Length: 106
Image (cartoon, rainbow, N blue to C red; front, side):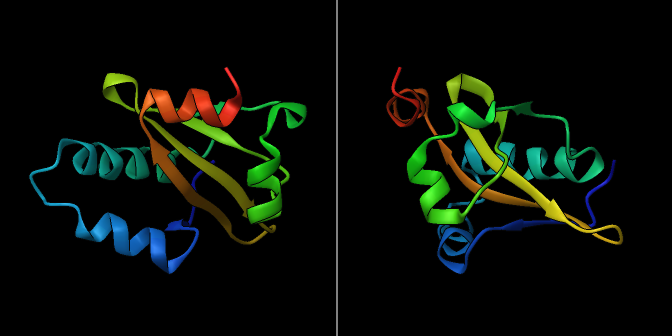
């Protein structure tokens, strides 16, 4: 199922992304990931509801969370929302493996 939009969850996250240098390999991988997510919103791994970190539920009022694996242990977190007419994949964050493990309590 295609996403009509692939957006950042808030302006601050989009600003941080836009400030990354064009030569930054993570920025290039995030761009690629967003393209893949737009083509198929289910391309990532779905996190079971009971495993979604409370911090993310509280911050974004989530009822689903998806993880897209980036190279070198980095992860992109996104959530799917929408209605019968439009599906939106909202990018929540990206992080290295250390921060990912900390967020999920591994």
